[in-house]
Image 1 (cartoon, rainbow, N blue to C red):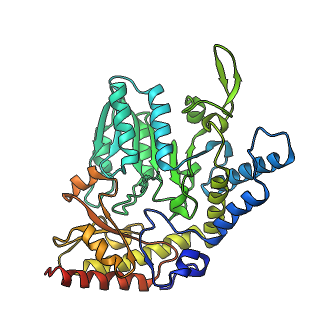
Image 2 (cartoon, rainbow, N blue to C red):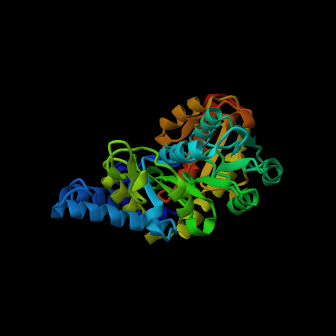
Image 3 (tube, rainbow, N blue to C red):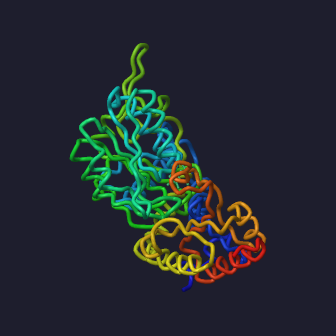
Length: 404
Ligand code: PLP
């Protein structure tokens, strides 16, 4: 199985031909098309958008607006103003927890998250629940790491105001049943907040059809630049949400005593925006669309299935999460008593990049009964040879540490 895109599209990969990059769940490499688009903005249309009355500023404004349009199309959002540019998934989720949470949560209300959340979709909800005197409830997981929807259905009540959950787990690759969770939330009038950081890069996400109220993603995990992301929301909930930050661009009128707010999306984007970031994200969306998200998903599933078979066949290896065919392109495992950090260091000596640690998911680590895991993650530039190299390196690591 060859890679889905030529390695030559990615400068870093083509100048390091022996590098086996298996850490795309942490951040993806950048195709030249993304870097060129960002450079082009700086070289041809760079100015501060929105406020300028001159042509160059108007062109910068236009680049920003058309980036929003491209991102909206990629995420299946009909109303472009519902795409809010942020600094990334963490920023997006903090915006909802702070701005929506502070306005809508009170004593006796309940916030539910799953036990498999990244800290970015766990800690902000835990903290706002503490601040507002609301109950913070953790939904148990099914054996495969997805939210246990039967348990969730019994947990919710009229007091449940919001259910926050990942679309795809960054540790297990488990894909949550979004429509079932949305149905359970709607039955009690609760909002849904979906962390799409590990889904948006890897599968077609049609926000308008998904049914969730909020969806968050990071550009850097989907071939775009670091420091940019999106919060997508349904028009009614965004319109009702107070501003997250105040300052330039997000106001309509500033009086000495009171201020009125601009319309969406500006009301939720205070200050000079990251135009180059938005342009880069839009170029990444176009690059992925040209490949086709179904092809992206199929390629990764095939690779991860192969990796699952090869790695789980090794003695003393424990692979966490669902079976090979049911997961997105993430494989977390532990090898005997070898500390995942030692494993990652040993693999690095062979030019293989994997991640090791708690993956910003300490509550999940506790549920798995481990302190840390090693994680290999796959993307469009990986091929079967990468899987072979991973499996061989693990065999060799076991020999070095004399396991089994
Ligand atoms: N949510 C999930 C599932 C993630 O995997 C990550 C990053 O690894 C985040 C949230 C946070 O993303 P960022 O650091 O880009 O804000």
